[in-house]
Every structure is written in C-alpha cells, then in structure tokens.
Amino acid sequence: MDKINQGKEPRKPVSPPVLSGQGEKGSDFMVDGWRVFKIMAEFVSGFEVMGDAAPAVSVFGSTRVDEGSGEYELARTLGGMLAREGFSVITGGGPGVMEGANRGAQEAGGVSIGFNIKLPNQQAANRYIDVDKLVSFQYFFVRKVMFLKYSQAFIALPGGFGTLDEVSEAMTLIQTGKSERFPVILVGKSYWEGFYRWVQESMLQENGFISPPDLGFIYLEDDPEEVISIIKKFYPEGYCLNF
Image (cartoon, rainbow, N blue to C red):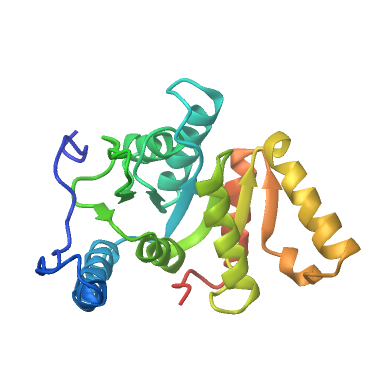
C-alpha cells in the first residue's frame, strides 16, 4: 500500500516569472523566453523519474470506461502481466484504461508510472501510481517525448483522439527513422480493425502513401498472452532506449 499515490502532489517544474505589461504587443515573446526554462524543467523531471526505471511499456486507452468494464479489466490484466515480465508500466496517469493498467502493475508488485497532463477539465491522477513515479506535465510535446523515449512497446486499447494521437505519433517517428522500431499493438480487433484495414487498403494498396515495411511493427491483437509474446520476440538482443 505504501506505493499507492494517496493524494501526493506530483513533481511540478518551476514556472517562469510573471512579467508586467502582459497586454502590450511583444510581451508574449518575452514570456516565451522564460517558458524555455519551464520546458527544460519538465524534461528534467521526466528524466529523473525514468532514470532508474526498468524497460517499460506504455498503455493507452479511453478515460471514459469504468472499473469493471471489459476495457478496464483488460488493461488491469495487461498491467499485471507486464509487471510480472519485469516491465515498468507507463500510462497517461488518468482514469479509465490508464487506471486499470496502473492498478494491475501495482497489484503484481511492479513499477507503476504516470505521466499526467494538466488539462482545462483538471484531469486528476489515479491512485495506483507509485508515489515517486508520478510526473505532471503542462506541455503535451514534452510528455510525448517521455512516452516515446522510454517505451519498449505501445499498447493501445480502445480510446479516442488522445489514444489515436499517441499511436499515430509513434508510427510517424518509426517510419521516418526518428525513433528505433518498437511494436505498436492495437488491442481489441473489433474496435481497431476498421482503422487498420483503412491504413492497409487505402494508404498502402490503393494510394501507395506508405510502404509495406511501414506496417511491420503494427499488430492487431485480442489475446493478452500474445501481446506479451509479441513484445518479447521483438527484442531478441535485449532492450534499449528509442532515441
């Protein structure tokens, strides 16, 4: 229980000083100069948290599922299985699928990490994140770097725009060689097969906008055991950072 996040404030990077004359033309550019330090602080906070983490897998999915739902319990199962295989489990720190994955990791005695994001609707971190593994980000792009740098795989359960954004970002960086290849596993065939078929048929076969190797790291799966097998088989020579 000592690992559960019980209302502890996440690490908060320093904020830039408030400058006078905010309404004057050009003042926004002055603030931008100081904002660089806030961005740097967010990177440092993330690097410090991940410095001693084991090889990790990120789990994505909808915030709009409840405890006991199929998606929640699947995420919980996957979180536990990943932890038992020695992987740290990373999520976006929020409710729904993310909570399920963090919960499963903690219940299995693994490392449970949350990269929370400050949103207008004040997304609260779930309580199944280890107290020293919760980071709160202001900037989406900094948070994306943390997911992409430290993940040995992306597992995407059914979700909305945020889930699709993380998946497509990973696909783009791998395709363009900006990241090492890692498996992107779409879990839930009935949900994802339309998207996967569109990529395969429209983008690849009909228009040639991508190449066959661009699909070589994307998987469509239902079975949690097979998800774990895909990740382990993808790294015959061991795990490494993606960039």
